[in-house]
Image (cartoon, rainbow, N blue to C red; front, side):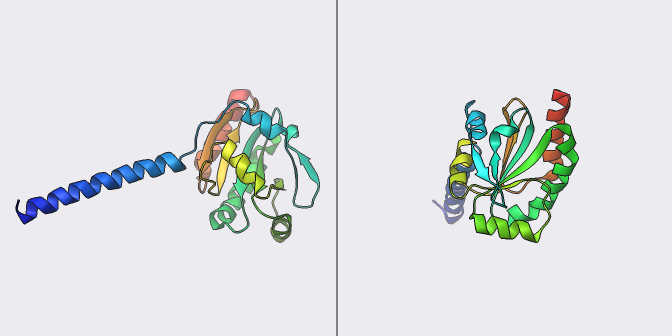
Length: 181
């Protein structure tokens, strides 16, 4: 076999393994299906907010929720928060809200909240929030992770990584239009 054919063969084999590796990575990190009971699990939670006051997630029943898992040590999480704040201001009068669940310590979330103005609730879940995110389809545990839940408790969309505001906004507004909110 000449040198050129051998190089072509090795290149093809390498490309095949790269594609296979990409497929396995996509399978591992892509959001996984969510069971119908997850919304009920979510509604059964009570978490402290940045000031330490208990926030009953059962109060979310009947609302469209943009649930954003984040941490103070996560740069893409922090970068998207002003966009989420703008979305919250836009939808809050329509029986919808953004809700931030911090995968962080209470002290870190409190200090972060004191530095900025966030119109939506910032809750503290600590490492337990990672398990909730996993139950909502985030098998990798990576942040940020955003889930749109409609007013009937159905998971409509999940996004691992930094949001694309216009795409998220279009999804939320379509859900609100469908429900007449």
